[in-house]
Length: 55
Image (cartoon, rainbow, N blue to C red; front, side, top):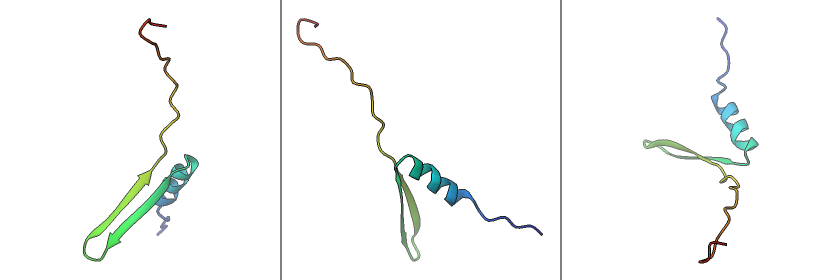
């Protein structure tokens, strides 16, 4: 029987790292665990501002 290694964590790590993010893990015996994926906000285009005259 051929058994392949799970790839979900390495793929998730590669994607998050490629986007300069982080993965954290919080765990406690008897309470389960929580993975958090933290990604930076994208650079949004600046919207032009106008004063009271509309310029």
